[in-house]
Image (cartoon, rainbow, N blue to C red; front, side, top):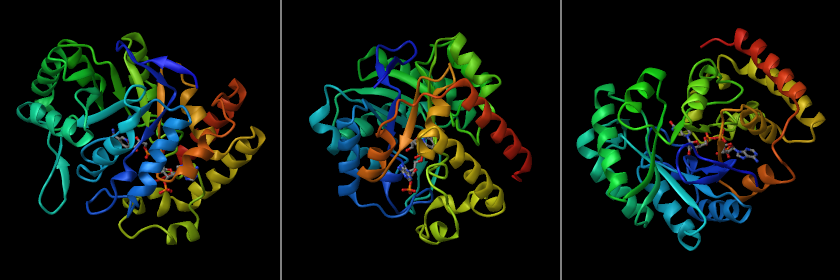
Length: 322
Ligand SMILES: NC(=O)c1ccc[n+]([C@@H]2O[C@H](COP(=O)([O-])OP(=O)(O)OC[C@H]3O[C@@H](n4cnc5c(N)ncnc54)[C@H](OP(=O)(O)O)[C@@H]3O)[C@@H](O)[C@H]2O)c1
């Protein structure tokens, strides 16, 4: 698979990385419902065997569980898989996840992630969310120290705006930004993607298939099969905007059929078509899902297909209610 350099880091990453949020399982407010750990481990191993060379996780995914599973599954592949994780979210004893960025806890959070992952160094440590904003500089400064000490290979951020990126740039340029980017979420196109390109900041986009809703059609039957605690039930596409979403999906599927791709592959290819994007973080929780995504696909689309999808997404965005 094609590889690209991640910003100013020394890592050459495949254009697809594996996301492991859903693998965190159940028992907290951002769960994707129950998940069999054996499926999770097999999914990660399958992704690596298919050529994917990086896995994205976070303590927030299953309150430490995703990191533990990633640690187990990647144990025998350490020399050719990069592990990316995050810090700055915290949770209470009831499993309610909240904001928790703090310069004072960066070191401790890093050591805890290293322990759960079973690694002596983290390849990429990212600030998960810049909240509270006042802790951005103290946290970033401490992360720079951990790089200098060799505990972290590279540092990046997620969900940052331009103003926050400019502020940390004065301390040290981030290797990467992890923003949301997919056909339904194009906010970063105007300012953030050009800024990253200009500043040689790698961009690894999350939820390229819009949490799976672009990989298959979530019709009434599919919605009825979702776990009661799957946070995606709250998405407007599954309630107020459901009819519009289904109409969009049907039209999108026609384009995917013409391209001989699945809708999931086409959604990822559209993300990767932006010149500022380094890679897409693709979530999967069953081996067959990642096999299907990786099957027979170079994730390339023509300029005319991209234009067709752009215009479809613009039509859609004028119809949806947030
Ligand atoms: N930094 C942040 O704030 C942030 C936020 C969100 C995500 N992320 C990262 O980005 C990663 C990817 O995001 P995401 O998980 O939302 O990604 P996504 O790639 O948009 O969707 C992944 C989901 O799509 C479904 N799927 C995957 N392959 C499929 C297939 N072949 N056929 C049908 N359905 C399929 C699966 O869900 P079901 O099986 O349940 O349908 C899977 O969990 C996360 O795992 C996480 O690492 C980061």
